[in-house]
Image (spheres, helix red, strand yellow):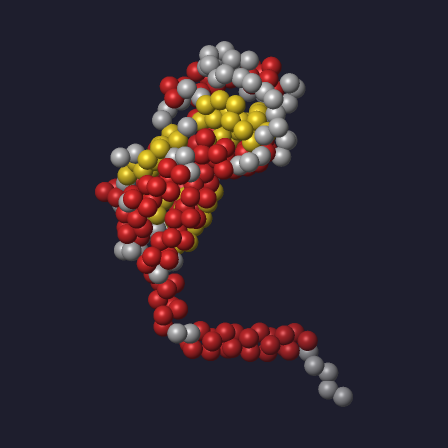
Length: 267
């Protein structure tokens, strides 16, 4: 009776599967390959998720060209591009990380545009009865009632940096610095509040607008932090067709979508 070596059998099966995969690839229609080669990859701040998914789907419907997205904290995306991840377009939630990639020669400088603006909002769970006006020395610590304030990590993500700057200028940072729950991006901070895990949070106004689990308590004064800008640029290795998607975002359809989601379109 012959005994088969299971490792040899496994190796034969793997070779067979690899051969089958190669055969299928060779039989794939040329149009399928072209579609993948024509796709554009956009690395974009998490706060842009909903609107860009809508715009990407519309662009594909109109042109037939696929748009792929990677959404995360701006800092995370910039580091990924620096480490060699392929992106055709970088859509940042602040100037600092756009500058970071630009200084390393990873962007096409002439393509950089400031496309959008946003506001910073103090939010509470939808069923909360907290009433608070955001102003110098406002009683945010008292309103937390023993809970913690949800916000982005100021050492890692733009929304956290804007929030820390605002709280410092309003004179309440020192009493709150040890009463925070820090998130890796704005959507995580939003979720903490929506789930009732934090009584209050600081997010972008656009994120608050799309989350039924929260309500806006008040907006932060625009002078309490630096302007919240969203610059966009082609990467140094961008495919030629990527520029057309940026123009689509800047056009009438993109403008209408951004305004619908509450962004400030910069002319």
